[in-house]
Amino acid sequence: MNTPKRLENALVKLYKAFHNNTLNPEDCTACAVGNILDNFDSWKHLSNDHGSLELSYVGRVHQNLGRKFNGYSPQEIVQIEKIFLEACGFKTPLCHYNQKPQNPTDKEVLFNGLCSVVAFLCKLDNVPNVMDYSKLFEYENNQPKYHLDTYLMS
Image 1 (cartoon, rainbow, N blue to C red):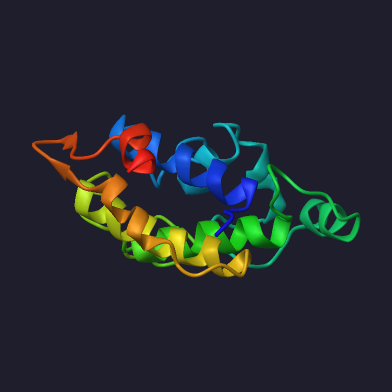
Image 2 (cartoon, rainbow, N blue to C red; image 1 turned 45 degrees about the horizontal axis):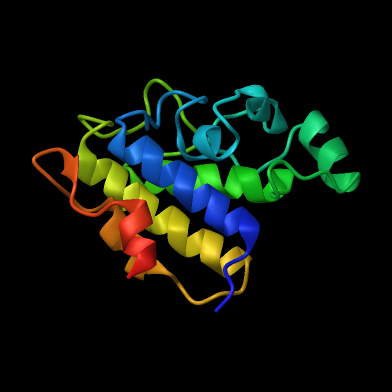
């Protein structure tokens, strides 16, 4: 099976962020979308509320023009973020009084978020869920159990 380039790139970025402890659902440059979009925060202007599926004026303009950001449309980007936040235990859209996980950067919390995001990314590209890649996100003693290059070679 041929993995679409945007999916492959997103998985590699999420893998690195997870194992380098640079994945943070409360930081728009370090959340799932922030990492997929090279740690820039300009994507946050695509919606008015973090974790909302409703595009802002800017988001609608980009969507209507057919713009893509690392292969993803504005609507796909806000969907990815909502899925990540909710799978991590946040109530969306984000607000200071809404429910959130006790420790948002806990590896288990982040792993749950990544599993949901990877499943959604595969669905977007009409490929079977490649969660056999979940081995890439397994860890022991806060270290990766498998490494990307050796896992893909086997």
